[in-house]
Amino acid sequence: MSLIAAENLTVRFGGSPVLDGVDLSVEPGEIVTIVGPNGSGKSTLLRSLLGIQKPSAGKVTRKRGLRLGYVPQKLHVGPDMPMTVRRFLALPHRPGAADAAAALARVGMAGMEGRQLIGLSGGQFQRVLLARALLARPELLVLDEPTQGLDQPGEAAFYKLIEEVRREYGCAILMVSHDLHVVMSASDRVICLNHHVCCAGTPHVVSNAPEYRALFGYGTGGALALYQHDHDHNHGHDHDHGHDHGPDHAHENDHAHPQTHEHSDA
Ligand code: ADP
Ligand code: MG
Picture 1 (cartoon, rainbow, N blue to C red):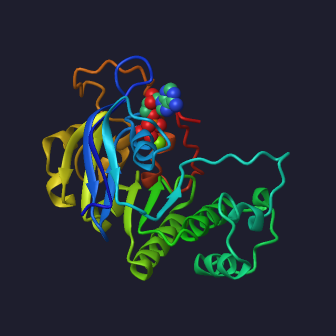
Picture 2: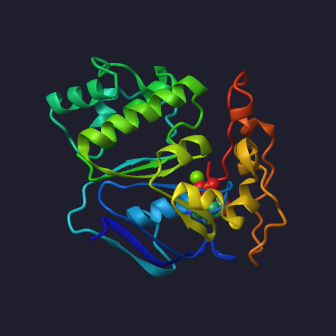
């Protein structure tokens, strides 16, 4: 039985649907990665699966009692809202001190309970988010662009950590990623989303699919093309997402620059 499944999932915020008849399921232990251009509905799909976003049509089924861990794409912590790592880990559940300490240790943040969130580096904050997700002892870990804003070594370290965690917990992973190299090497299945499922299958099958090629281009240029996809690739939708993604997003080809990803769901 699937851990989670969407059938004919449709989400509309007014105009044409952000998600249109999406089918997707995640089986126990699987790594499923969603790729797609900015504004293609990836975060909305995850939020719908998690029950945070109500679908306009279609349905989501979760295994009864499914234990979920979620690392959201963005979490703003205002400088005027002081919060320690310890307090943050206690939201929304209240783990024992030993569990919190163990989760922090697992992500390489042992003894950091008393630190202020705003004092953490991007990589440390991502680790705290992961620790918080692990407190649920997840059967399914859902990660939305978890390495966004990290530099390349930080990205590699974070993916390694996720892989370790998966082996230890035996959990399935559903992840949105912009890092096509990771996607293609580490996923059991890839889903290419552009408001609907363009193509899906093993990394090998998807990377050779014409729909995927149309969105992401060929070879190593694919990572660049991910954010500069062909605007003529039209599925009959008329979305106005403002695809103004500059070369900032092409970080795989330019490790020297800090990343300044801008997302329309800010
Ligand atoms: P992605 O994660 O693929 O970049 P999102 O799922 O965040 O895309 O957003 C897809 C589209 O839906 C965007 O145009 C975004 O502005 C819009 N959108 C997302 N959430 C909402 C919302 N709560 N209300 C209105 N529009 C939204
Ligand atoms: Mg998103």
